[in-house]
Length: 386
Image 1: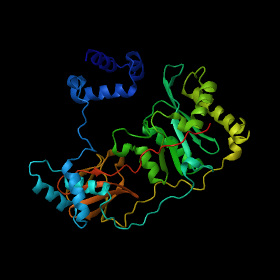
Image 2 (image 1 turned 90 degrees about the horizontal axis):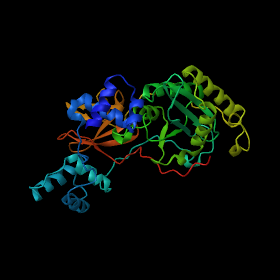
Image 3 (image 1 turned 60 degrees about the vertical axis):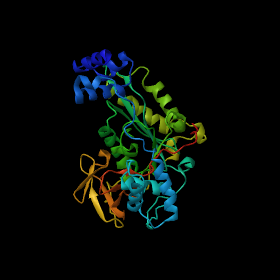
Image 4 (image 1 turned 90 degrees about the vertical axis):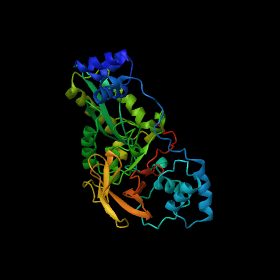
């Protein structure tokens, strides 16, 4: 705890997070976690915490599995009746919520779903991209210090098929507000891609949010852009973008610029040369600009969300809750301000959906969302050729 206290004390004295983290040999993510714990709980927040998870999502009582088999014999029984039978057969066992029972039955394919018309995107699979704008790649090129002692975080966006470098912006932080500005500018200039491939870091993903979504990725989904994440620890799955980063680092940061203006000027020169002068072997020595053309899907802001096949459309509050029938159900703050659909699927059981994605069930008793299988889970991608 002494080291943690020293770490927090230096931050409270006004020292920069990155500098202090480097001296203590920890990541900035860990550093922010420590200072947030101190801000929330004081000195007590710096003590060791149990690593035991609060919940074990995949661990269910053995009796539930037996009732799943009973459900197969009685296919017309819903979750409330299944739960009631569990209570009667095993009165000494803690009984899960109705929504949990329903989720178990659904996971075993024992819930009859109503037919639903969906507007799903079609086209070439992402792992076999053939045309510009079917897939873009985005990432931050690490961090490096400028001559004025400030840290720079370059945000880069490229087209997968043509290697065209759409943007390279010198930012002073990886906070999502600045990423929003960059992506909106790129969308206005080049149109919308079919999908965007990123790693699992901030601001592209949120480790503690529902399905690891972030406000940025939710915004992409609203625009009709699919999200695609590489497997953690496998940067080779975004290989051609990482190869571009090596060239970017070599030609623009050795040495670094004097300040952000000078560094951005270097990035702009690099983008121009990379797209219009530098031949690429994978393109038969063509320039990326010779292979790229803007997307036919223009950026026109967010389309309105409608849920004609749900009982009600509800706006998520700023704290990430949905209020329905005088009940408050925690969803996730990444959906704040978004509209979700609510539909009753069984007696006292409701389904929450975002766009065409079903998020999970909740019931009138516990008012707790039981997430379904992650519809936005990272795909296992093949290695990307450079």
